[in-house]
Length: 146
Image (cartoon, rainbow, N blue to C red; front, side, top):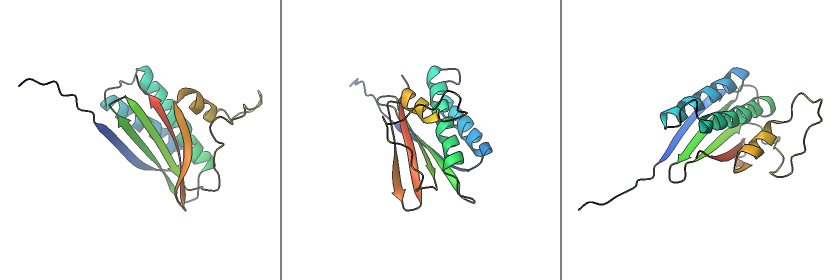
């Protein structure tokens, strides 16, 4: 019997990192390495886009979600059936939630920051924030790798 069977695998990667600029940089590098290992090379558009999204969410966790002595968590979930990557960054500031999707206002032209979530909204297919417990919030996005 010769049957074509296609297996769809869901892959996971999760790590806790210090809520510091160094931790945010490491999140980006680890995401690029993980995607490369899953078949999206460093120089591919999918890898570059996903690592940019990780960098933005991790930086936001460090800048806006930091609580002294608490880490942030990066989780990547790859759904191979449709080549969708879910990026989740969990921090310790439940009182500082981002605006809801579709309500982001552009920053003033002379502002130094305020563009990160606009990039997340532009480059991802979906994004949002959830509270998993009384002590953490998760900002997530999904991106099609193909």
